[in-house]
Image (cartoon, rainbow, N blue to C red; front, side):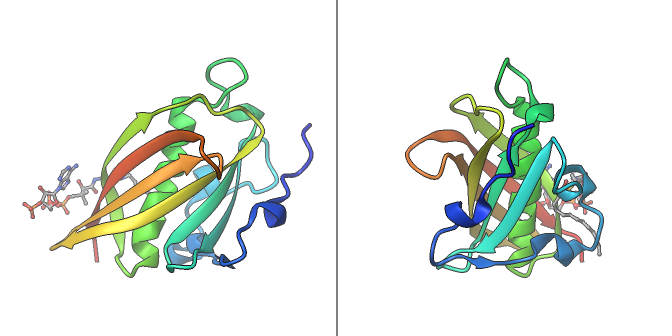
Length: 151
Ligand SMILES: CCCCCCCCCCCCCC(=O)SCCNC(=O)CCNC(=O)[C@H](O)C(C)(C)COP(=O)(O)OP(=O)(O)OC[C@H]1O[C@@H](n2cnc3c(N)ncnc32)[C@H](O)[C@@H]1OP(=O)(O)O
């Protein structure tokens, strides 16, 4: 079993911890529901621009290609984080469309960073863009997430 990821060491100085899942209650069990488990462990923050950012550890149970995360596991993380980015910006939504480009294999038991940006709001439609990276130059995936306001 790998050691617990050191989220504090990876946290940037202008990030503030933010309990994004609490915006929608206790329902987000698939990704955020087992923070000590072998699948995903996530921590949420607001960055210096007040956008939502997450650190996401991909455990051994997210395996797809040998030693690397399944694309569906990356999609699950992007679905939750980008959806919550809209909630964190004040838009109660569900995700209507999630379009992902997978750019690079993501090694198991590593921590990835998800940066988000709300790029437009048109009526009930909120477009959120996200990047899943190694926190430096390495881009694992990028996504456009069309969220639809429900309340
Ligand atoms: C308190 C409540 C708690 C709730 C907790 C939620 C937690 C979520 C947390 C988030 C993290 C977890 C994330 C998750 O896991 S969220 C879970 C995954 N998402 C779902 O399961 C969503 C299922 N789908 C739906 O519920 C409905 O289809 C929605 C609500 C999305 C729309 O059905 P509705 O009948 O209401 O709307 P409408 O058809 O009148 O369309 C309205 C406008 O939107 C446009 N459009 C719609 N769909 C699409 C599409 N696919 N592509 C492109 N465009 C689309 C449409 O053209 C129209 O545009 P315009 O003609 O006005 O220009």
